[in-house]
Image 1: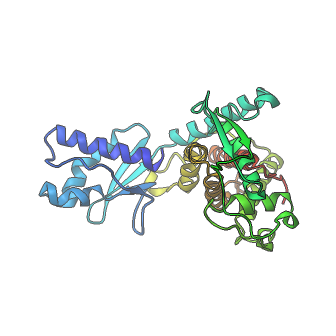
Image 2: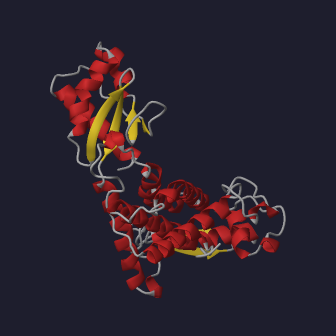
Image 3: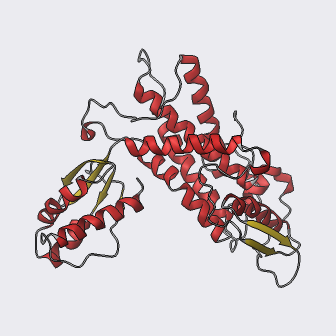
Length: 346
């Protein structure tokens, strides 16, 4: 369940409370849902009770107590706690993560079975939203325009559309040209240098794209993919494989065993939206930036995947491995759409 979905859940809870006569307020257009701040609990938190307290004429904690049962009854929510002056802290159950990982696995397997001619159909994040649409891209004779158009052929194709690229006037795709030839960076770093900035930004053609450091977004994305593959190999050596499920110890209450996967699950769940927006807005940079978000979340999560010391592999380890593998799959697929290699070793 993503923050956007939880925001709708919170608004439905307010609407039910109003319909039941428990609150007398206008239902707001949006509810802010974010990871909990210092002192917070659970997977996500919302300040909706503080927002509604004054118009409702009630203390924030009282508003939170009214909304709490309405949110708690939502499928995928395991518990709701109230902290501070009236923040609602939402705990998710493992079912949503399990369903997400299985969806990534199944869609990836389905896409692979379709063969090379339909390489971009069926994989996770791909859709038929643009089926039947033919998009004409008219570009100048410029290396950056060529690379952006080439990436858009694949990105729009992932949404069922088709792109025809022409060098003719009037131009309708003219990203700011690179200040110099990117070829010396090599094919992968050159493409990233041209695709990562927004079209209206001038790309940097520097050796920074080649350094293997955390300051280099391309390195983080490719390294995160390589780490996902390494986790798979290491788990095999330890004698266990992945199984989608709850990453937590199910014997603990959620508040005693907070989820460490929330940023990664959120990034994976929002990948289809990022890909759709990249296609709709002719903006490969949106996909590139989202891959960085997935990579950063995976790199923060990776240390929880394998057993430590004398610890035996558990159902939670198998579930964490499945989530890490799903993230690696998404990173590989996204890089492929950008025309960039995703190495297994880095």
